[in-house]
Length: 163
Image (cartoon, rainbow, N blue to C red; front, side, top):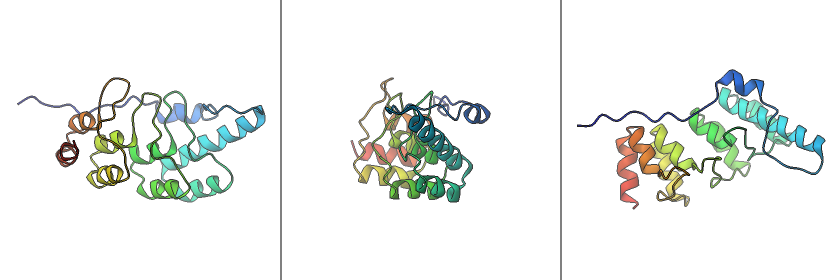
């Protein structure tokens, strides 16, 4: 039987994320507003990565954009919460209005990240909320492809049932 390798999602090293935390994709007319929101958004992403949900809540209340997209890959705080396994942060972001249909710059959806991480419960929850397993990223990969590369048999079965 062919051996499957776990999918490696290209990521910047954590120290480079910190070094480049003021970079963002938001465009605003006022440069100062852009920089302030970018800083808050980057700090929100870092708080989610660290699992510091108390700080993340503080940042959201201070005006951090809940759908901030970090450069270079366009990951949102919600994507970070799935990739770094922070379910409390994920629920908090959703309660603050995070867009579950947002994709990164490669077109990867939350469902793809959930399937890759092997989280059957989250995969089922996202499917019930309307995310579609047939959606493909810019390389033509679906959530099922990510589940296969992550070797998550439960997610594979779940995604095959929804076809």
